[in-house]
Structures are given as structure tokens and as C-alpha cells.
Length: 189
Image (cartoon, rainbow, N blue to C red):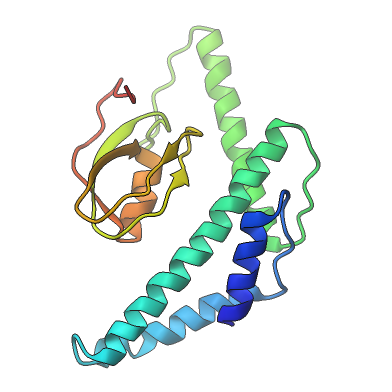
């Protein structure tokens, strides 16, 4: 499974367009991660087995997140350039559906702004351009943020600023800790 995952990852990183994902790869990875986690709490804390599983979990999660992030970026670029996108995976269709919903919401916001209407943000929404200060907990490779700018790479204990949307994703994965709450009008300098 890991060989197939790494092969798909390298193909996605090096390929110009969306590369076909091996059939059933995401389901296989999901099952594999669930299997690794299943007996995790029973392992002796700090044991070699636990450290090996920690490393395997971290590496697998990083690779699958990176593959999906690259695919989303490629879909967005293709949409911006009005190029056709070959969507072979049902997961790609789900991502595209979400992107289209986001584009529709952006169009609604634009229309409201053009017509001088105030439209309050829904609870919990954050504009993508807001930056937050974060403390890096685990090594984070360089990535392209939702604002199209490159961030990182970051080493543990570094303090950095990044888009709130990206920070939320990295915090969920345990890679960073948010240090401040974004204020209206906070932007990268």
C-alpha cells in the first residue's frame, strides 16, 4: 500500500495535470490508517512499536494530505485558466463540488458588494486573506496558501504567520498551534 501511495504522490507532484489516482487508493489508505490507530492506545507509551506507528501515521497522513492539496490546487488553476479537468475519482468530484459551491458563494459576496449591500459573515467563517500567528509544533514543508503565496518550510518552535484557513487545517493535524485570533483587517505586510 505504501509503495502505491508514494508512487501516486510523486506522480501528482511531478505531473502537470491531475494524475489518475490508483483505483481504491484513498479507501485503502483510510483503512490502513484506521488499522494503525486501532490498537494504538494499548501500546506502552514511548515503546519502539508506538514510535514506529507514530512515524508511519505522520508520514502517511502527510502524503495523503499533500496529494489532495496538490489536486485541489491543480483543479483551481485549471478552472481559473478555463482548461478542462479529467476527474476520474469520485473524491475529485466531491472536491470540485465544494470548489464550485465556494465559487458560487464568492460570486454572491461580489454581487452584494457591487450593489452596496452589507452581508454579514456566517458564524465561524473567516476570509481567506486573514493571517494568524502560529507556533510550529512539527516540521511543516513549504506549501502554497489559499492566497496563492508560498509559506514555509517551518521547523518546530518557529513562529510564523499564515492564512487562517491553512492554519486551521494544520492545527487540526497537530502541526501548529494558533497564537492569536485574527482581527478584522489583519493582512500580510
